[in-house]
Length: 436
Image 1 (cartoon, rainbow, N blue to C red):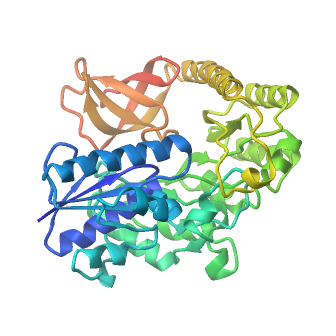
Image 2 (cartoon, rainbow, N blue to C red; image 1 turned 120 degrees about the horizontal axis):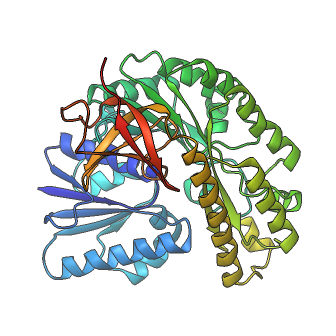
């Protein structure tokens, strides 16, 4: 019997799908992931319910597979994840063709609906669906923050950190499958460990993970500025395995906006942390996200944000037009009065500025040499990344298949020393250095 899991949304959802795939494979099922052409007996859609666009994608995917079930091309259809957690009753009422809706904590119930039981001995096992050389490592679930714009605490619940020893075992299992890069993810890396150890334990976890011989890169995603454990900066500066890279969403820089958003810090504290990174790790790549058009964002506040972004020059940046999400503090207390057109215009202005910054920073890399991990081969190029780039969201290094001075094929999942020969706003071009 074939089970196909379709994963929508973030990398945290992907990890959930990989754990579930491992359970099904151990039970003797044939497993597929994100397979849209090959038929399957059972399809499980792991949904995202974070913002409107994600919800629409999830609903459209469910409707697509309801139609396939109606036509007889699959036997069972289940839906799991954030959309199910957030709107289970409404989905049940509107989509009776679905055989079951399950929330974010209900992997055992999904297996039971298929007549099986969860194998607790496999809880650290995963069916890796990323390229074999990298994998996401989810170190906690849920969030205790109260950001006004965010629905995640209501969907995923309070923070639940995974113990260090369990994460080390999971990492050991991953490297046995060929993983060389661990990308640590959570709703909030900064608070990891408080709920189980009574302290911020991210530094302790990193000290354990760097001991795993086969791990070559460790990358940190989704750190919250307030309370960030600054020992991590020292570890990053002194430990080669920890990439000089951090994803640290700031959302805004104006104090009124930060207060209204419930971020728990002001501009001064935020800048102190960011400049400490730049001071102690001069070549650090900082990725951030900001929100355009949050309720109450005046032209002056937006201009302050633009001026800060132009001055600080984040290496990587994403922007979201504000989405007025129900069951969030902002939805309950604030009016969404900024027109969608204004939100979009502000978001476009931010990305235009970031494109210029990224182009300037990339041009400065021409002639320099970097260690590059090859991710894939595509359209006449080897496509790789430096330690300053995360998969799918950041810059890529394009190395022509032809004209390779090594006179041999490069291998996906291997590291090569590459000289940058040209640069665009979000891509770099390079050539592998000749071996001595």
